[in-house]
Image (tube, rainbow, N blue to C red; front, side, top):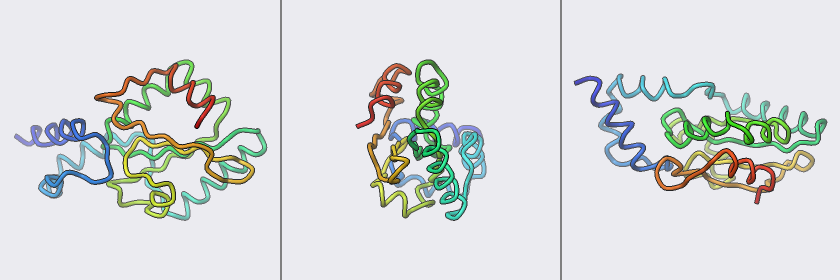
Length: 170
C-alpha cells in the first residue's frame, strides 16, 4: 500500500505535466514520507541552493561565458518533473550533448515545488518546467526562452531537435 501512493503521484504528475500550480490533490500527499522520498530520489544533480548561492552560480557562469565566447543557459527544473527527467536523457545524447558543451555555460535552477527562487520565476515568467532561458554573456540579458512541458506526453523532442534550437535559440 505504501508503494502505491508514490507511484500514483508520479503517474498523476506525468498526466498533468510539470506546471507551476500543482493539482488540488497535492496537499493530500504532503504528509506521506514515501511520496517525498520518491520526489527527492529523482532530483539527481539538481542542488537546492540559497538565493545567494544561485546568484553566485549565475555570475560565475556569465564570467566564464564571456571569456569563452559562449552564452548562459538557465535550466529551471525539479526532481518531481517527468519532463525535466526526459530532457536530461535527451541532453546526454548526440548532437545535443556537443552543442551544450560547445556553446553554453549552464546553471540549473531547482524550483522545488515552485516555492524556490520566486524572483527568477517571476522575472522570466516561468510557470511550467522544464524551462530554459538563454542569456547573452556580455549584457546578461535574455536572448531566448522555451518550455519543454509536456515532452513526456504530446511533444516529441529528439536530441537533434533540441540541438537545433540550442544552435539558433529564439
